[in-house]
Image: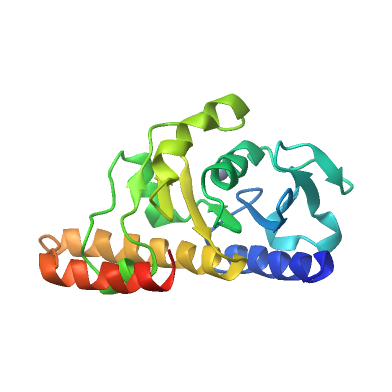
Amino acid sequence: MSIKNDSNILVNFCHLLYKNGLIAGFDGNFSVRIDNNSILITPSGKPKGFLEPDDLIVIDLTGRKISGNGEPSSETAMHLQVYQNRPEIKACCHAHPPYATAFAASGKQLPDNILPEVLLSIGDIKLTEYIPTGVAKEWVKLGQYIKMNNAVLLANHGVLTLGTDAEQAYLRMETVEHFAKIAFLGESLGGLKTLDTDEVVRLTKIREDKFL
Ligand SMILES: [Zn+2]
């Protein structure tokens, strides 16, 4: 696939993040791996809801800019951690969806083993420690949380989802936020009920056979 094609796809998913209320203002960033050593990433300082394909930046796996007009995302180090730790991952989506970010900002993990859809498409969603935003060297802390997980809540910050392509990373972001909303409502109705262990094992195996 060409960079032009990848750029169009990435920009479309950035617009969807904005239209669907998963980001606001200058929030969020999104990247795709275009080959073994190059990453296409959203720029710093531009609203992702209004991006054009030409706004995107190409960087190498060390974060050095290869091409593009602006500067790469201020959270480039977050994305590099993912690509360095998970060779099979081809896309990273970072957003601040309100319900999931409310869990992250309250220091609360989303409960495991509640909805089949989450087990089938993501698995467990870990809550990280606080990682100071915009401080590249701090993102090494992310490595331990994403080795086995396809989505994490970033404490006091937002959500990061990984995928084998931009669509999967985007859809996982939607699923995390939808689940966070359901979990919030379920708690207000008296508490969520966990799935049986056998069912969790069955659903996890289906996901692992399909994705990882
Ligand atoms: Zn952020």
